[in-house]
Image 1 (cartoon, protein in one colour):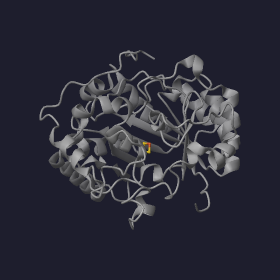
Image 2: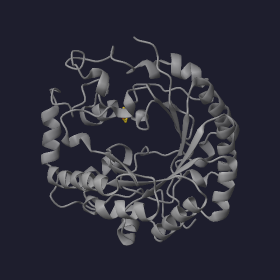
Image 3: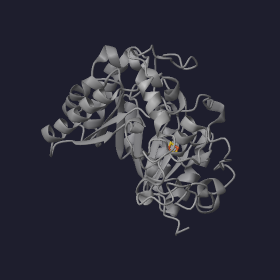
Image 4: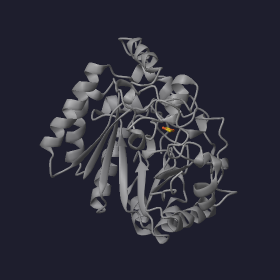
Amino acid sequence: MSAIPLPMALVAEVTHRCPLRCPYCSNPLEMARAAQEVSTEDWSRVFAEAAALGVLHLHLSGGEPMLRTDLPDLIRAASTAGLYVNLITSGVTMDAAKLGILVDAGLDHVQLSFQHADAAEAERIGGMKGAQARKLDAARLIKAAGLPLTCNFVIHRQNLHDVPAMMALASDLGAQRVEIAHTQYYGWGLINRNALLPDATELMAATAAVEAGRVLYAGCMAIDYVTPDYHGDQPKSCMDGWARRFIVISPTGQALSCHAAETITSITFPNIRETSLADIWLRDPAFQRFRGTDWMPEPCQGCALKEQDWGGCRCQALALLGDAAATDPVCARSPHHHALQGLIAARPSVAPDFVYRQNAKPTSP
Ligand code: FES
């Protein structure tokens, strides 16, 4: 095992509560309740520990982090610790007064999520009436506050034909960056896979639209593109490798190597209420389990790309094969690659209805 790399970013999932009901939600099927959430004091301590460990960026995520009434305190604690603070939000609960308090507390950047460029479709997908107008207002407030803005669109078979309109909306809103990210199939998103997974032709059209956008918006707006690797033959470098760059902390304080890691029930993940972040990162067996390359089976072990893709995605191997230690079946050299191709071929030609979370009813903020 080579030297342990320093973590670059901490993803703090401060709550699972959310007014939206996106069918591609990657949060667990069983979500944490408000009474189980980590306290302000514990989060503040962890932010200081993260900065001491070398973390540069804090991503405040959820659920909807703006539902935490102590969000200004969390931002202040992180900013005081020296972290660059990014708020990942749906924007539906934002107003000028709330944003002003967050800016005063030290907020550095906002990533605002959208479900579609079209309001009716966006609200159908997200399951919340009136959400799009609130998001557009939020974008204008963020720009007026002088904060850098990233717009995020999660795309799938029911909205990917509208990628040009998504990029145009982000540009009109003054975003410095737009992220066009294909759905990944974890958590609730796995339940809706047939309603979300595009076919290869649809994927190619979306990719071509992104490439055209990169020419059109060159020098004005950066475009990040996350592809669905089900259609690939080389796995993605998930999280840039297990416990190499990121620490994810769940609303209940479980320290994870990725947002879906709790699906790997054979691993016991530590909790920040009981263990320091340095001990977790440097010594906890859960963080060592798939770090580096020593754990890899063949053909990964002998592969020239093993320090580029770091073995792909452990949660995907578990979800598709029932074995988190198996070669990611996206890889053409996996003995199970054909099973993934069979799964894609069996995708229904007409998208089934979305299955929405029943415990997250649309709410008025
Ligand atoms: Fe867990 Fe990829 S999401 S390793």
